[in-house]
Length: 359
Image (cartoon, rainbow, N blue to C red; front, side, top):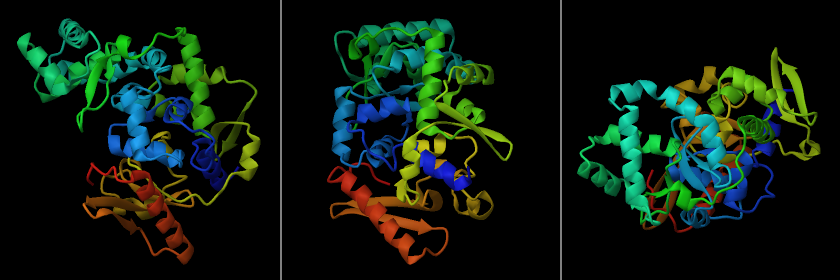
Protein backbone atom coordinates (compact mmCIF):
# COMPACT_ATOMS: atom_id res chain seq x y z
CA UNK A 1 0.00 0.00 0.00
CA UNK A 2 1.24 3.47 -0.93
CA UNK A 3 0.28 6.88 0.48
CA UNK A 4 -1.92 7.43 -2.58
CA UNK A 5 -3.73 4.18 -1.74
CA UNK A 6 -4.38 5.46 1.79
CA UNK A 7 -5.96 8.60 0.35
CA UNK A 8 -7.99 6.67 -2.21
CA UNK A 9 -9.35 4.19 0.35
CA UNK A 10 -10.18 6.90 2.89
CA UNK A 11 -12.05 8.98 0.32
CA UNK A 12 -14.04 5.90 -0.60
CA UNK A 13 -14.72 4.74 2.95
CA UNK A 14 -15.76 8.22 4.08
CA UNK A 15 -18.30 8.30 1.22
CA UNK A 16 -16.67 11.26 -0.47
CA UNK A 17 -16.08 9.35 -3.72
CA UNK A 18 -19.00 6.98 -3.38
CA UNK A 19 -22.58 7.97 -2.70
CA UNK A 20 -25.06 5.15 -2.22
CA UNK A 21 -26.51 6.56 1.01
CA UNK A 22 -29.47 8.91 0.70
CA UNK A 23 -30.45 10.41 4.05
CA UNK A 24 -28.39 12.46 6.54
CA UNK A 25 -29.21 10.02 9.33
CA UNK A 26 -27.88 7.12 7.26
CA UNK A 27 -24.55 8.87 6.74
CA UNK A 28 -24.22 9.99 10.36
CA UNK A 29 -24.99 6.49 11.60
CA UNK A 30 -22.49 4.97 9.15
CA UNK A 31 -19.76 7.32 10.35
CA UNK A 32 -20.72 6.87 14.02
CA UNK A 33 -20.38 10.58 14.76
CA UNK A 34 -19.37 13.74 12.89
CA UNK A 35 -17.75 16.74 14.57
CA UNK A 36 -20.22 19.61 14.45
CA UNK A 37 -19.30 22.65 16.51
CA UNK A 38 -19.29 24.75 13.31
CA UNK A 39 -22.91 24.03 12.44
CA UNK A 40 -23.01 25.50 8.93
CA UNK A 41 -19.86 23.62 7.96
CA UNK A 42 -21.07 20.43 9.63
CA UNK A 43 -24.14 20.55 7.40
CA UNK A 44 -21.85 20.94 4.39
CA UNK A 45 -19.81 17.94 5.61
CA UNK A 46 -22.99 15.91 5.20
CA UNK A 47 -23.84 17.52 1.85
CA UNK A 48 -20.33 16.80 0.57
CA UNK A 49 -21.03 13.10 1.04
CA UNK A 50 -24.67 13.16 -0.09
CA UNK A 51 -24.59 15.13 -3.35
CA UNK A 52 -28.33 14.87 -3.98
CA UNK A 53 -29.10 16.94 -0.85
CA UNK A 54 -29.19 20.67 -0.18
CA UNK A 55 -28.54 22.66 2.98
CA UNK A 56 -32.26 22.91 3.69
CA UNK A 57 -32.57 19.10 3.55
CA UNK A 58 -29.95 18.68 6.28
CA UNK A 59 -31.59 21.46 8.29
CA UNK A 60 -34.94 19.67 8.07
CA UNK A 61 -33.38 16.40 9.23
CA UNK A 62 -31.82 18.20 12.19
CA UNK A 63 -35.02 20.00 13.17
CA UNK A 64 -36.99 16.77 12.87
CA UNK A 65 -34.52 15.01 15.18
CA UNK A 66 -33.35 12.50 12.58
CA UNK A 67 -29.85 13.65 13.47
CA UNK A 68 -28.88 15.13 16.82
CA UNK A 69 -26.10 17.43 17.98
CA UNK A 70 -24.54 16.89 21.37
CA UNK A 71 -21.22 16.50 23.21
CA UNK A 72 -19.64 13.06 22.95
CA UNK A 73 -16.32 11.39 22.06
CA UNK A 74 -14.39 14.58 22.89
CA UNK A 75 -15.30 17.90 24.58
CA UNK A 76 -17.03 19.26 21.50
CA UNK A 77 -20.30 18.90 19.61
CA UNK A 78 -20.92 16.03 17.22
CA UNK A 79 -23.76 14.97 14.98
CA UNK A 80 -25.00 11.55 16.05
CA UNK A 81 -27.88 9.26 15.16
CA UNK A 82 -30.75 8.92 17.67
CA UNK A 83 -30.23 5.15 17.55
CA UNK A 84 -26.62 5.59 18.69
CA UNK A 85 -26.64 8.51 21.09
CA UNK A 86 -27.22 6.59 24.30
CA UNK A 87 -24.64 3.84 23.88
CA UNK A 88 -21.96 6.20 22.56
CA UNK A 89 -22.58 8.58 25.47
CA UNK A 90 -22.36 5.75 27.98
CA UNK A 91 -19.07 4.61 26.46
CA UNK A 92 -17.35 7.96 25.96
CA UNK A 93 -18.86 10.41 28.49
CA UNK A 94 -16.55 9.29 31.32
CA UNK A 95 -13.54 10.14 29.17
CA UNK A 96 -14.96 13.54 28.18
CA UNK A 97 -15.65 14.31 31.83
CA UNK A 98 -12.09 13.29 32.71
CA UNK A 99 -10.72 15.56 29.97
CA UNK A 100 -12.88 18.41 31.29
CA UNK A 101 -12.11 17.89 34.99
CA UNK A 102 -9.60 20.75 35.18
CA UNK A 103 -12.16 23.21 33.83
CA UNK A 104 -14.84 21.81 36.15
CA UNK A 105 -12.58 22.61 39.10
CA UNK A 106 -11.61 26.00 37.68
CA UNK A 107 -15.31 26.91 37.28
CA UNK A 108 -15.98 25.54 40.81
CA UNK A 109 -18.53 23.11 39.42
CA UNK A 110 -19.04 20.19 41.77
CA UNK A 111 -21.09 17.04 41.33
CA UNK A 112 -23.71 18.56 43.62
CA UNK A 113 -24.02 21.64 41.41
CA UNK A 114 -24.23 19.51 38.27
CA UNK A 115 -26.97 17.46 39.91
CA UNK A 116 -28.95 20.61 40.73
CA UNK A 117 -28.47 21.95 37.24
CA UNK A 118 -29.66 18.68 35.69
CA UNK A 119 -32.77 18.71 37.85
CA UNK A 120 -33.59 22.27 36.77
CA UNK A 121 -33.09 21.42 33.09
CA UNK A 122 -35.35 18.37 33.46
CA UNK A 123 -38.11 20.35 35.16
CA UNK A 124 -37.91 23.26 32.71
CA UNK A 125 -37.85 21.12 29.55
CA UNK A 126 -40.39 18.53 30.68
CA UNK A 127 -43.49 18.20 28.56
CA UNK A 128 -41.89 18.41 25.13
CA UNK A 129 -40.47 21.91 25.52
CA UNK A 130 -37.73 23.05 23.15
CA UNK A 131 -35.91 25.90 24.88
CA UNK A 132 -32.97 28.11 24.04
CA UNK A 133 -29.79 28.54 26.02
CA UNK A 134 -31.07 31.94 27.21
CA UNK A 135 -34.26 30.44 28.63
CA UNK A 136 -32.35 27.71 30.45
CA UNK A 137 -29.98 30.34 31.84
CA UNK A 138 -32.98 32.20 33.25
CA UNK A 139 -34.14 29.01 34.96
CA UNK A 140 -30.72 28.65 36.59
CA UNK A 141 -30.85 32.31 37.63
CA UNK A 142 -34.15 31.73 39.42
CA UNK A 143 -32.56 28.83 41.28
CA UNK A 144 -29.62 31.10 42.18
CA UNK A 145 -27.07 28.90 40.41
CA UNK A 146 -24.22 31.07 39.19
CA UNK A 147 -23.99 30.64 35.43
CA UNK A 148 -21.54 32.97 33.77
CA UNK A 149 -20.95 32.31 30.08
CA UNK A 150 -18.28 29.62 30.56
CA UNK A 151 -19.99 28.13 33.60
CA UNK A 152 -23.26 27.84 31.70
CA UNK A 153 -21.48 26.09 28.82
CA UNK A 154 -20.11 23.44 31.16
CA UNK A 155 -23.43 23.00 32.95
CA UNK A 156 -25.12 22.35 29.62
CA UNK A 157 -22.33 20.08 28.38
CA UNK A 158 -22.45 18.02 31.55
CA UNK A 159 -26.22 17.64 31.18
CA UNK A 160 -25.64 16.36 27.64
CA UNK A 161 -22.96 13.94 28.82
CA UNK A 162 -25.27 12.71 31.60
CA UNK A 163 -27.92 11.95 28.98
CA UNK A 164 -30.35 14.55 30.33
CA UNK A 165 -30.57 16.91 27.36
CA UNK A 166 -29.81 16.91 23.65
CA UNK A 167 -30.49 19.17 20.69
CA UNK A 168 -33.98 20.29 19.79
CA UNK A 169 -35.07 22.00 16.55
CA UNK A 170 -33.77 25.44 15.74
CA UNK A 171 -36.00 28.46 16.29
CA UNK A 172 -34.94 30.82 13.56
CA UNK A 173 -31.16 30.83 13.89
CA UNK A 174 -31.18 29.88 17.57
CA UNK A 175 -30.48 26.38 18.84
CA UNK A 176 -32.74 24.76 21.39
CA UNK A 177 -32.38 21.94 23.89
CA UNK A 178 -34.76 19.07 24.59
CA UNK A 179 -34.99 16.25 27.10
CA UNK A 180 -33.22 13.23 25.67
CA UNK A 181 -35.85 10.83 27.01
CA UNK A 182 -38.58 12.79 25.23
CA UNK A 183 -36.66 13.51 22.02
CA UNK A 184 -35.28 10.01 21.39
CA UNK A 185 -37.22 6.73 21.60
CA UNK A 186 -35.65 4.04 23.76
CA UNK A 187 -33.68 1.33 21.95
CA UNK A 188 -32.06 -1.87 23.12
CA UNK A 189 -29.14 -1.07 25.41
CA UNK A 190 -25.61 -2.22 24.59
CA UNK A 191 -23.21 -3.68 27.11
CA UNK A 192 -19.90 -1.86 27.39
CA UNK A 193 -18.13 -4.59 25.42
CA UNK A 194 -20.77 -4.38 22.69
CA UNK A 195 -20.45 -0.59 22.55
CA UNK A 196 -16.66 -0.76 22.32
CA UNK A 197 -16.81 -3.35 19.55
CA UNK A 198 -19.44 -1.40 17.62
CA UNK A 199 -17.62 1.94 17.79
CA UNK A 200 -14.36 0.29 16.70
CA UNK A 201 -16.06 -1.44 13.80
CA UNK A 202 -17.76 1.78 12.67
CA UNK A 203 -14.49 3.71 12.84
CA UNK A 204 -12.28 1.36 10.85
CA UNK A 205 -15.05 0.60 8.36
CA UNK A 206 -15.65 4.28 7.61
CA UNK A 207 -12.17 5.77 8.21
CA UNK A 208 -9.68 3.06 7.32
CA UNK A 209 -6.86 2.74 6.59
CA UNK A 210 -6.14 4.10 10.06
CA UNK A 211 -3.87 3.30 12.99
CA UNK A 212 -4.44 2.59 16.67
CA UNK A 213 -3.35 6.13 17.52
CA UNK A 214 -5.73 7.58 14.94
CA UNK A 215 -8.59 5.72 16.62
CA UNK A 216 -7.49 6.85 20.09
CA UNK A 217 -7.43 10.52 19.06
CA UNK A 218 -10.79 10.34 17.29
CA UNK A 219 -12.68 8.32 19.90
CA UNK A 220 -11.19 9.84 23.04
CA UNK A 221 -10.76 6.32 24.44
CA UNK A 222 -7.70 5.09 26.29
CA UNK A 223 -5.06 3.13 24.39
CA UNK A 224 -6.04 0.07 26.43
CA UNK A 225 -9.71 0.34 25.47
CA UNK A 226 -8.85 1.06 21.84
CA UNK A 227 -6.68 -2.05 21.69
CA UNK A 228 -9.49 -4.11 23.19
CA UNK A 229 -11.85 -2.75 20.56
CA UNK A 230 -9.42 -3.57 17.76
CA UNK A 231 -9.10 -7.12 19.06
CA UNK A 232 -12.82 -7.60 18.36
CA UNK A 233 -12.45 -6.83 14.66
CA UNK A 234 -13.04 -9.92 12.57
CA UNK A 235 -11.37 -11.45 9.55
CA UNK A 236 -12.96 -8.91 7.20
CA UNK A 237 -10.40 -6.35 8.36
CA UNK A 238 -6.90 -6.17 6.91
CA UNK A 239 -3.82 -5.11 8.88
CA UNK A 240 -0.88 -3.80 6.87
CA UNK A 241 2.33 -2.12 7.96
CA UNK A 242 3.51 1.02 6.21
CA UNK A 243 6.75 2.67 7.37
CA UNK A 244 6.56 0.70 10.59
CA UNK A 245 2.95 1.66 11.40
CA UNK A 246 0.09 -0.81 11.33
CA UNK A 247 -2.90 0.37 9.32
CA UNK A 248 -6.27 -1.31 9.65
CA UNK A 249 -9.04 -1.22 7.06
CA UNK A 250 -11.95 -3.31 5.90
CA UNK A 251 -11.45 -5.60 2.94
CA UNK A 252 -13.64 -4.15 0.18
CA UNK A 253 -13.81 -5.02 -3.49
CA UNK A 254 -14.92 -1.44 -4.17
CA UNK A 255 -11.37 -0.18 -3.68
CA UNK A 256 -10.38 -1.37 -7.15
CA UNK A 257 -12.84 1.13 -8.65
CA UNK A 258 -12.29 3.92 -6.14
CA UNK A 259 -11.47 7.27 -7.82
CA UNK A 260 -8.13 8.90 -7.08
CA UNK A 261 -8.89 12.43 -8.26
CA UNK A 262 -11.42 13.74 -5.71
CA UNK A 263 -11.39 17.53 -5.38
CA UNK A 264 -13.67 19.47 -3.05
CA UNK A 265 -14.01 22.33 -0.60
CA UNK A 266 -13.39 20.72 2.78
CA UNK A 267 -15.25 22.18 5.77
CA UNK A 268 -13.24 23.07 8.84
CA UNK A 269 -13.25 20.23 11.39
CA UNK A 270 -14.25 17.76 8.69
CA UNK A 271 -13.91 14.05 9.42
CA UNK A 272 -11.53 13.67 6.46
CA UNK A 273 -8.99 15.45 8.65
CA UNK A 274 -10.37 15.10 12.19
CA UNK A 275 -10.42 11.30 12.07
CA UNK A 276 -6.64 10.93 12.15
CA UNK A 277 -3.73 11.88 14.38
CA UNK A 278 -1.26 11.64 11.49
CA UNK A 279 -2.44 13.87 8.63
CA UNK A 280 0.73 13.67 6.57
CA UNK A 281 -1.05 11.69 3.86
CA UNK A 282 -3.12 14.74 2.92
CA UNK A 283 -1.03 17.70 4.13
CA UNK A 284 2.57 18.70 3.34
CA UNK A 285 3.43 20.30 6.66
CA UNK A 286 6.97 21.34 5.65
CA UNK A 287 5.85 23.33 2.63
CA UNK A 288 2.32 24.43 3.47
CA UNK A 289 2.03 25.02 7.24
CA UNK A 290 3.00 28.69 6.79
CA UNK A 291 -0.17 29.21 4.75
CA UNK A 292 -2.51 27.88 7.47
CA UNK A 293 -3.76 30.58 9.83
CA UNK A 294 -4.68 28.35 12.76
CA UNK A 295 -1.67 26.07 12.67
CA UNK A 296 -3.48 22.88 11.76
CA UNK A 297 -5.15 22.27 8.40
CA UNK A 298 -8.15 20.43 9.83
CA UNK A 299 -9.23 23.55 11.73
CA UNK A 300 -9.43 25.54 8.49
CA UNK A 301 -11.58 25.44 5.38
CA UNK A 302 -9.23 23.71 2.97
CA UNK A 303 -9.13 23.19 -0.78
CA UNK A 304 -8.67 19.51 -1.54
CA UNK A 305 -7.23 18.64 -4.95
CA UNK A 306 -6.81 14.95 -5.76
CA UNK A 307 -7.32 14.12 -2.10
CA UNK A 308 -4.63 16.49 -0.76
CA UNK A 309 -4.74 19.90 0.91
CA UNK A 310 -3.70 22.47 -1.69
CA UNK A 311 -5.12 25.74 -0.35
CA UNK A 312 -7.68 27.50 1.82
CA UNK A 313 -11.07 29.00 1.09
CA UNK A 314 -13.80 31.13 2.61
CA UNK A 315 -17.07 32.55 1.44
CA UNK A 316 -18.94 35.81 1.52
CA UNK A 317 -22.69 36.11 1.10
CA UNK A 318 -24.96 38.98 0.13
CA UNK A 319 -28.31 39.52 -1.49
CA UNK A 320 -26.64 38.86 -4.81
CA UNK A 321 -25.58 35.38 -3.72
CA UNK A 322 -22.52 33.50 -2.51
CA UNK A 323 -18.95 34.26 -3.54
CA UNK A 324 -16.24 31.66 -2.91
CA UNK A 325 -12.77 33.08 -2.30
CA UNK A 326 -10.11 30.42 -2.95
CA UNK A 327 -6.43 30.73 -2.05
CA UNK A 328 -4.28 27.90 -3.49
CA UNK A 329 -0.86 27.42 -1.91
CA UNK A 330 0.75 27.44 -5.36
CA UNK A 331 -0.22 27.88 -8.99
CA UNK A 332 -2.65 25.18 -10.04
CA UNK A 333 -2.56 23.35 -13.33
CA UNK A 334 -5.40 23.99 -15.75
CA UNK A 335 -6.93 20.65 -14.82
CA UNK A 336 -6.72 21.46 -11.09
CA UNK A 337 -8.22 24.90 -11.71
CA UNK A 338 -11.15 23.25 -13.45
CA UNK A 339 -11.51 20.81 -10.54
CA UNK A 340 -11.58 23.75 -8.13
CA UNK A 341 -14.29 25.54 -10.12
CA UNK A 342 -16.40 22.38 -10.10
CA UNK A 343 -15.85 22.05 -6.33
CA UNK A 344 -16.96 25.64 -5.77
CA UNK A 345 -20.08 25.11 -7.86
CA UNK A 346 -20.91 21.95 -5.94
CA UNK A 347 -20.86 23.87 -2.67
CA UNK A 348 -22.99 26.70 -4.10
CA UNK A 349 -25.48 24.12 -5.37
CA UNK A 350 -25.67 22.63 -1.88
CA UNK A 351 -26.36 26.02 -0.33
CA UNK A 352 -29.12 27.02 -2.71
CA UNK A 353 -30.81 30.03 -1.17
CA UNK A 354 -30.05 28.99 2.42
CA UNK A 355 -27.05 31.24 3.09
CA UNK A 356 -27.83 32.66 6.52
CA UNK A 357 -24.39 32.00 8.02
CA UNK A 358 -21.65 34.38 6.93
CA UNK A 359 -17.97 33.63 6.54
